[in-house]
Amino acid sequence: MYKKVCIYSALVLGFICPCAAGEPGTAVSTAAQIQSTISASTAASVFPKLLWEKKLSKSITSSAISKDGSKIAIADETGYLTLYNTKGEKLWGYHYEGKLPKRTYEFKSDKADTAILNITFSSGGKFIICDLGVLNAWRKYPQGGEENIALHVRNKKMCFNSEGKLLWQTSKEGTHLIGGDRYVLVVVWPEGDEESSEYSVFNIEGKLLYKGSTAGQDSSYGFSEDGKYFFIEKKLIETRSGRIIWELSKGVFVGIGKEHVLRTEWREELGRYTCRMYDITTQKKLLDMNEFGELLSDNYAFGRESTMGATTITAYKLKTNGVAWTDRYDVGDFSSRYVLSYLTKDEKYLFVGGEKGLRLYDIGGKEMWRLPVRNKVEWYQYFRYPVAENGEYVLFGHNRSVRLYKSF
Image (cartoon, rainbow, N blue to C red; front, side, top):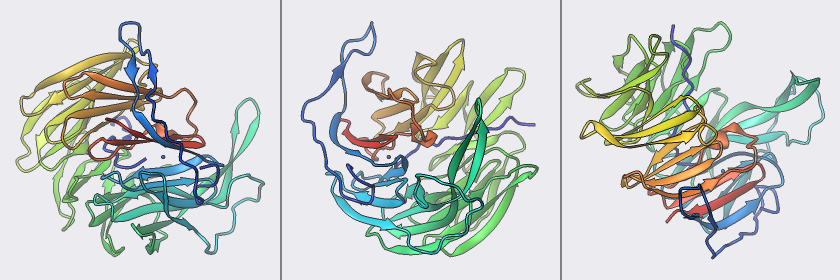
């Protein structure tokens, strides 16, 4: 039996106004760069340049940035989806006006009846897919008493073009990814005693192409950048045909590039995960990693391991089958669960982020800057720090604010 693998995708190409997200806000530009001492052994580090900041009237629920960095989508608990450009100017807004399902329970809440969740841009930035969350349930959590928490439950999946036109919608449940500008993968994970995951593949016009299932409860899935292949747990699949080209007997897939795929396996005798890199076509093993890893590109992989109160992160160079650089941090800086990484397309810069903040390195391991997080993040998915494809723009949002930074 494999231990559950929770994958928080690091190849993020999207992330997080004195007003609601659906209304234009005031951009706050800062020409001056901010400086801060980052450690006793390191000189003052220059922060990235803040281009603008918007204040939200409600907590953020989702946000994303297109790969080219030209489009920024923001949603909050007012129920609006709004698209901005890099100057902070509003391009368009959307709010669902249709009929809502009857609530499971009646309760009072300061949340809107709807919220936009899980915003995802297609690779070319031509399409946006998101979930419409409907306020129709609540839960009680005993925390030294009882606390009623209102939840937005996914009700519809919607696809927009970049001009804000709603192209199609479906009541299909599940998490989603977009492969290139052509395919949409929707996965329904097992709950309770269920033992398999169900997946559906649509074309970008919303037509269902095929369905499938996979045994296990390991939440791992992903697309290659061009959308040619996708993996879900133990299966590697050709997207166009739905043909399974590789199915593992042990472990699960956790990363994919154009040419390579990464699998992980829990090693009981070691008490940790290990990863191996393979060529997709030949299925030849290329690299062993003695920790949990992520595939950053077809040239680099990223590994992390938390032991003895510290987290070690390592960048592997696949062409030489060796270590590019490694560093060690306090667990307080990068918790083992929420470490996220992103390599720019030109492979010159690596972003590493966690609960305490974001760091930028050059590919040789030199730290360029740090961006700390001092306030507790309410929505856990916003430990992500979506960046533009070339790393020029970083979108950072949590609680009731969103900021756009220029990295270099």
